Amino acid sequence: MSKQRVLTGITTSGTPHLGNYVGAIRPAIEVSKSPELESFYFMADYHALIKCQDAERVEQSRKEIAATWLALGLNTDNAVFYRQSDIPEIPELNWLLTCMAAKGLMNRAHAYKAAVAANEESGEDPDYGVTMGLYNYPVLMAADILMFNANKVPVGKDQIQHIEMARDIAARFNHHYGDHFQMPEAVIDDKGSILQGLDGRKMSKSYNNTIPLFLTEKQLKKHINKIKTNLLEPGEAKDPDTSTVFQIWEAFASAEQTAEMRAKFEAGIAWGEAKRELFELVNGQLGEAREKYFDLMERPADIEDILQQGAVKARAESAPFIEKLRQAVGLRKFS
Ligand code: TRP
Image 1 (cartoon, rainbow, N blue to C red):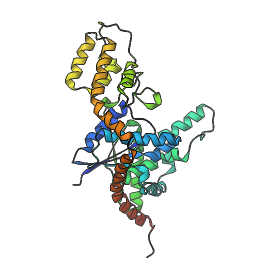
Image 2: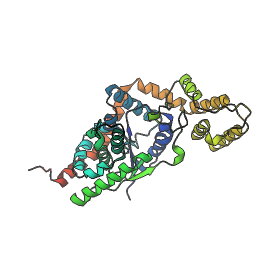
Image 3: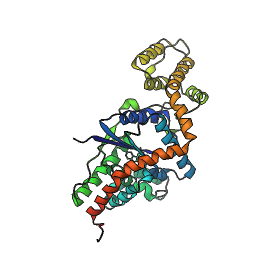
Image 4: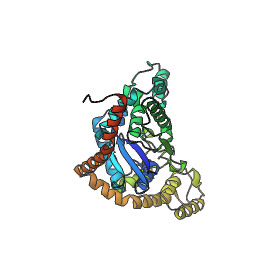
């Protein structure tokens, strides 16, 4: 049996934060070390253009995300790490799939429907601000996945529908042109991997409640001090299960350290002290990667080299595969 292939994309429109690290980056880097799995990780920078039209932000975000993954120890010998926009076969496949994707299917995409609903709510034209990029988002994502015939696609819950659409489009293509694509499956992170942000809601750029992953020590301390707590005094027992401080602790600590902190909460640890310990823990775990990160950010040409090597590996697959697909749909040479 051939190896299982894991593939996931990271939209390059923001700065990586602790929630991204715990929910997506850390588990993906673990997978990249496993010789039993083939992993494909890429920066979805074409997707980034859909939600972010600030060119400098897109450029900076790609650099930050690449440096983050590399600094945290992504094994690029084992994993294929590349930028979507370095693989011209992806937009080519995007078109072949566009011609097989039902418009009615795209009408049902959550992100598009949410945009239309928001317009209707505010009395705008339903299509106000909706680009074809947003509308076609699921087809491009299907192209990302099907280009490399990935079996397993780790994503957040909000992306499940997109994987289902990829299967739908793949099945239609296979039915029409022969068996070219395997059916991808979503792999959903378990609930323990969703981190709370400064205000207690899910840590997310859209809530503006994140703790960026690589900060100076001073900034990290400042962010941790901003985590919302209640007014309980030192000595008063605190509920670990409703505390963001404790939840972040748990995401970084061993089982033993977690049990110790739970006992301290019950014994009434002061919020200031709990936050100081949280800072020590997180800072200790990210310190080494942070050095590497800041170093890499100073050497963008080295990041570029690594990504170019990734693109060569990826295109060794995508180039012959797109050729086969061109044949299948009738785009053939005459001689
Ligand atoms: N849409 C995904 C997200 O926002 C990112 C993404 C793009 C992706 N292409 C992909 C994820 C292919 C998995 C597979 O999270």
